[in-house]
Structure formats: C-alpha cells, structure tokens
Image (cartoon, rainbow, N blue to C red; front, side):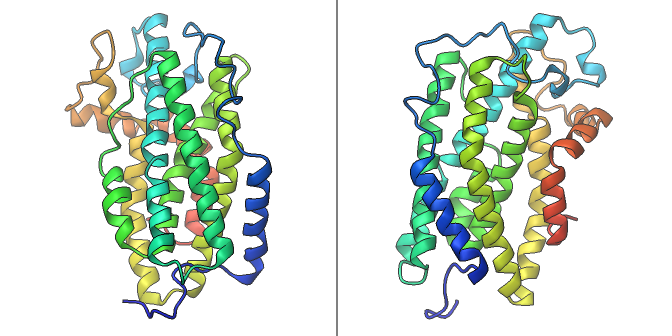
Length: 299
C-alpha cells in the first residue's frame, strides 16, 4: 500500500497551471445540453451519419452485393455503437473520479480535485445528450463493451487514480478520434456532425488532462510500477482497437441477414485484419499511436 503521506494523484509543477486553465475554460465554454442541438428539428436518417468509406466491412468481400439502403442502415447502426460506447464510458467516469476524490480527499491537490469534478460534470452532460440523440434518431443502445466495462467499474476503482486516468484516457481517445475522423464531412447528417463536433471541444480538454497526468505518473513511478502499467496497457490497447474497428454485435441489429455471424470468429478476424481497416486505423489513430509509443505502452 502507498504511504498515507504520498499524493494519490500528482502532476508536475509545470503542468499544474495548465490544469487550472482547463477548469477556467470549462466553467465558461462547456457543452450545454439544452442548446447544443436544435432539438425541435428532425434527424435525417436518409443521410449518412458517417463517411460511408469507413463502414466496418467496407473493402472486404462481405460488403460486396450490399444495396445502398443496406449500407445506409449499417452506417446508422455503427453510429449507434459509437454513441453507445461513449455512453457506457462516460456514465462510469463520474463514479470513478468522484470515488477517487472521496477516498483520497486529503491526498489530491485542490486544483486536481476541481478538474476531476469538472470532468465528471461534463461527462454527465455528454451522456444525457447522447441518450437524447439516440432516442430522437430511433437508435437502440448497444451492449456494454465486453471487458472494458468491467475494467472501468471493477478493476480501475481498486487501482491508484493515475492508472485510472490513463486507461479512461485510452478508451476515450480511441472513441473520440474515431468519431471525429468519420463524422465531420460536409455531406454528413447535420445534427450528427454538430453533436460530435461540440462534444470534441470538451473531450480535447479531457484528453489533455489525461495525457498530463499519465506523463507525470511515468516520470515519477517506480520502475516496477511503471512496468506493471505498461504490461497492462500492451494487453488492453489491441483489444480496444479491435473492438472499435468492428463489433460482431452488429449482426444482431440489422434488418437483413448480415454476412458475418456474431460467433464466426474466423470472418471477424478477417475483418479486423483487413487492409482497408488497417489503413483507416493508421490514419485516425496516428496521434494516439505516437503518444503511446513514446511512453512504451504498445507492443
């Protein structure tokens, strides 16, 4: 167990003022649930909510023969998965971060406690907004991401706060990069594009905070503690990338017979390793890959 006199969550002095700035910006320029979208207008399900070139099975033999209507359906279902992933993540973070504040209230600096609270408040607003959008668009929420939900609700609450911040950062950064990479084209359904863009402004601050806390952890952790976290990260990152690239649950949502059964592991692996998805992942996750490689977090 760590010494009771040691800070439970630390950041370098050079970064402390940056965290204070994040709080100040959030107090004045954060997502407002009531005004972020024109809730009185319709969501146009006849427009693509994402770049159709980024459909999970695009570039594979399983996309051949699909009609335009089926591809549009897939695009909306994949967007529902992306939003569901945000919901499952963002409704767990307040409990995780407020739990850290409660447990280590005398061992976390006031400016870090403040931003953990701000972070948590923004995640609640995001969750409310995403759920309202899903209802308005007629989209069903997908199941929790297998393994990652247990990580957030069972494993991380038992670990030191900096480790919790790191792994929520990794999950959130993957989802954020993926959403922005595919949703910001001019021909994308307007409310979908606007929602992800507004969400991005808050998420950019969350990602900056996560990076600064994580970098400070590796600068001060013992070699043994750093090695343990790196080993854990090297196992989780590939699973996270695969999960975002293609989720087999889609076979249970389509109105037509999907070409890949949810339990056909050979075909699922084929889609995960397709040249098309490899290229897209290299493009959309380039910033994440550069950062985790710098810290030795990826195999």
